[in-house]
Image (cartoon, rainbow, N blue to C red; front, side):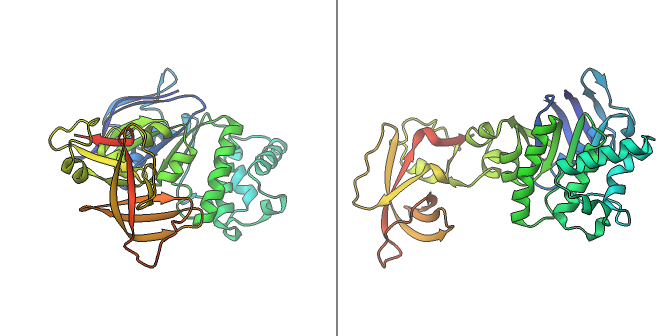
Length: 342
């Protein structure tokens, strides 16, 4: 288990991360999520030993590793750029750490072959130079090189960010499958919310050097405990003005002054104006006009003006609209799905 206890990292007068306290469980896929410059990579590098905390301690199980050299931490890192040796073959890249440890040649050959098979690298690719491989193949080599040494912990810093969208999704699935098969504790850094939600057992959301929330993907998304987390994860409608214009209707909310109110776009329901839609106990209906629509194949996203607020909603099937783009619709909000913040 990894434990950060009151960890602060400063560069002169600038505080990169402040008073971090969290644990990563054995075998867990734990993600640091946040925008650029929020401290997530700095935190990762302090775990690996590339950065020394200004104060606080880092523990691996019950051992204080705060001042332990990188090479003695049994942690392997996959960098955003992969940091492979371009003039070496794939085999030589994967075998490098084993050769440094002076493992016997026959054992190195066996270990490299085994790990290459697990990350879906063909035997003929082992003889190629790294520079001859695609980005996805290079990513597999970087992971294989890290895993062949059988580390206790694998850390990855934005490993998919240099790939195209389709390959990112493919390798994201492969990465999660590999992590499950190896059962290795994995710490992952990304700014991509979709990556974090689909890969992680738990997520720590960073903002300006501090952790705003730690939880499962479902907790982070459905129960965002701060306005920053709510806006950073997923797509939202800011319905504050609509709520404050009709306080008598939103009787289940805390209507204190300056509270902000949000609704996830998939939580809204819409139907053509005049069609009957049975409301459940906490649902409210408003009349709006469609001002835009975006077709995504498996769903359509609608922008609707309700009074002086524009909200978005998604439907799996397109509405049968007439020729008038500003067609009236009913927008149904559920009070139990509204997120509110002071």
